[in-house]
Length: 217
Ligand code: SIN
Ligand code: FE2
Image (cartoon, rainbow, N blue to C red; front, side, top):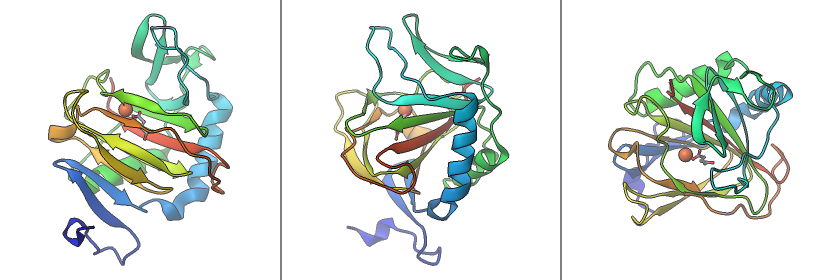
């Protein structure tokens, strides 16, 4: 591995790795904040349970989804969109907790984006075998804002490609506490998650949790 890619300025506790222009991984950046993150996600889950959404084509997504903030991402036979209401509870999505706003702002700033104010926070839960096919995050209103994506629990392989679905993908292993931030020239790059392998992590047992922030509305 090329050490030039790493910024070891942070006491060796966290380091920054470059995926490509305008896409970075903040390695181990949140590893020490597991307890607060766990309590926060559990509180959101209690108000807006994880559920498996259906795609427009009628398939059931293997990752279970919930969220918080002004907007949640929803998918059904009508297609994909952001909605101010959770279709399961028919209530507004839970408020985005200050700790999540703060973390998102901090991570975006590390990637060079000041004053990041996400209005949508999606939380995906993957059990072994669950995956996310290559896709672009393109339902948001503001593409100048980056995506901040937190990995928690069991490890995964994050796939990061280019502007075309057929572009070669880079395999980025993501562990508990890693944060990927992509924006600028990489904002519309195709990305996905390979099928999760069986593993155990004290954070959420056999599952992986991913939190992504967006400026959607
Ligand atoms: C997503 O692209 O929305 C999720 C990515 C991930 O789970 O790492
Ligand atoms: Fe995505």
